[in-house]
Length: 154
Image (cartoon, rainbow, N blue to C red; front, side):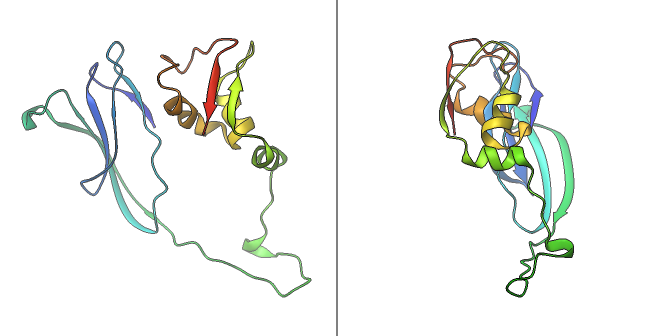
């Protein structure tokens, strides 16, 4: 989840009023990135809250989304039978490669992007905020990474 707030503002992700995650917007640009935690089954009401000071009058809720997460159902088949119906899961080759790819560090080469690095190392490009947050001291702008930078892959 990425967005913009007042430069230096504190941004919080809430579920039904309870803080899940907090970050601070970039002091120069106001941009922020949050990687929400995995939510359990049940009803959720996510919202973003931004504040520029500890004064409650300065707190603003910007967005709210209500939804439900269905419980996961484990399906088992008789021994020797292939999975069928909803239990059949096709694994993408890239996701399988990503699971086997070493995590830890990556040295950036020309043409690399956080999206591509995330896709190759974490299995999904949309997880690039994970790498961005893990390297917040090295990356000012997630759109600009440079050759020979050494980034941590969580």
